[in-house]
Image (cartoon, rainbow, N blue to C red; front, side):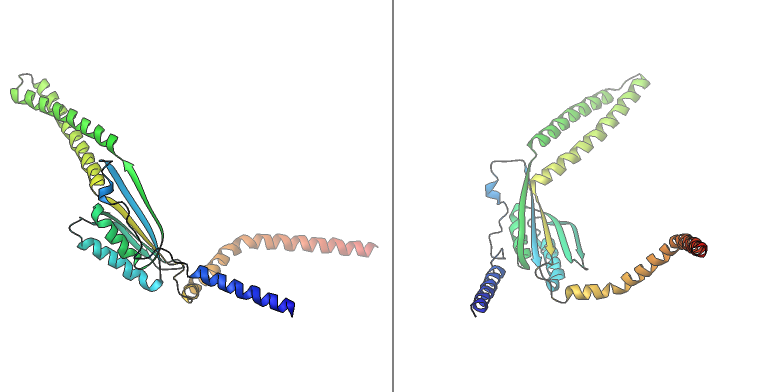
Length: 264
């Protein structure tokens, strides 16, 4: 009786412990999901922010949540939200992801919308200082602009020597091409500073249904079965020589063994 009572007590204690950990609160839509507010960025004028959150949701809400975030981004004209990449996968491990470019003021709203689909299991913010890179690009733009202007002045003055004129025109074309390339880099770097990158990942782990894994296994039974047959068909040609070799070895062993028995 004492052992039974002790066993029951430990069993009840384990149930209580499991129950308390199961309902331990995590991040939710009401949690503070502020990534990096604009007023906190006064120290770095050329900082590029990239945010990432992972939301554990259910299989039923996966596609709906994915579409809701994409639609919200498309509707946010004020913060110039742009979807850079999005994908959704249904299978053994269902998941979805969205990568967006948006102004800092619009990050929290999109993150909060995604958090409403389940539990935020991870969030992070990475900051890259682009001050040195932007300064180098601006310096390069200044040098190329001055060089282009000087070449234009020489071209406008006119040169009697045709060969010199061809050299000036060729160099001007090259400088103009380099200038346009560097200006494109400058625009890209400024865009990284003016807008943030937000990546939202939806995963189906704790929120998946009981029948989900069973359903996936049954749906893949046919293809797996046919793959198994195909693999055996491919292996058979390699096994035939070995069967022939083993048959000959066994035959010779038995023959010599019978001869030995007859002599004895």
